[in-house]
View 1 (spheres, helix red, strand yellow):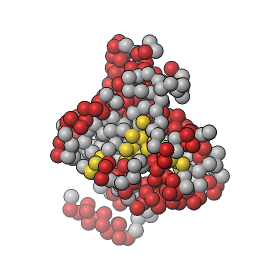
View 2: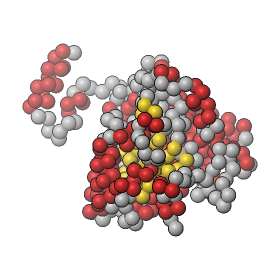
View 3: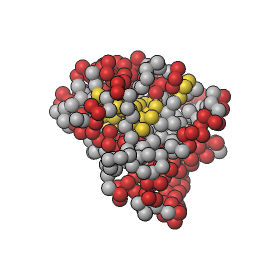
View 4: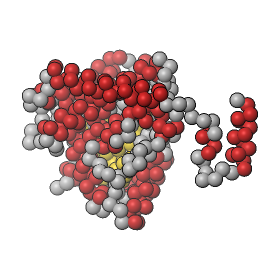
Length: 356
């Protein structure tokens, strides 16, 4: 029996391997070796520190509006780490972790949030699409790319990341319907962080789970503990392997929590109380993984200090490099819309230049 049969979304079971106290559920095993677990933990530490740095840069006026990933690191690290070269990722706007896992330099990510569109350009060979600000539109792009790959016979997988709020948009349902009909190799990864900006999950949808929405479209669905790196990794790995072998799409609901604001333009104290956050602090994905490593003799305070210092040095260097990039030319707004600039764009560009 496959994982998707055992944890069929209508059975009301959430897939979990690693408990909040750092121990494993009975008869469960980590999907990777201890060394790989430690490596993934280091990446999660790096992501959290890079995220905190971005928040500080925004507050200092050195970066524009930013969407923090704080609390959702396991969802992104666990899922993106099973992808291979050639696969495509379609992010929303909170995918710092997935972007770094795909190989996008931190400097490039910071450039985007600093308002430089050069930050939307992933390095050659890294199939990471630009940030998608409109809620829920990009799953359609992931399905279209996967369908094209299937027609061509390319054995690639596409992954689309989005939040619980996106599942209330028509684009999401169109994408799921197309994926089911054409059995495309797409993973729909919903990071259910309990809020769509200020709207809580309980009034976002009447469905008992988001994962069960897969049933209507004839694709597999599974709800996983999104703060459990092992569960996310294992579920995504099975979904990716199935997709790559022609088994079609999967909807994964990672149940997690957004500790910070929706973006730095948001004030979460307006719609949630501090006591609501407290129970989730014990489920922090980094704390949970750290407890596991400590139990295996692979973590202590000195190790944490070394990991943190190394990450902080790399982050500080990325900030320096990003802030050293010169301001783009105003002509760039017009030059890269078409292969050849239209007369209308040429006229608009000359007009704008004349007002500066």
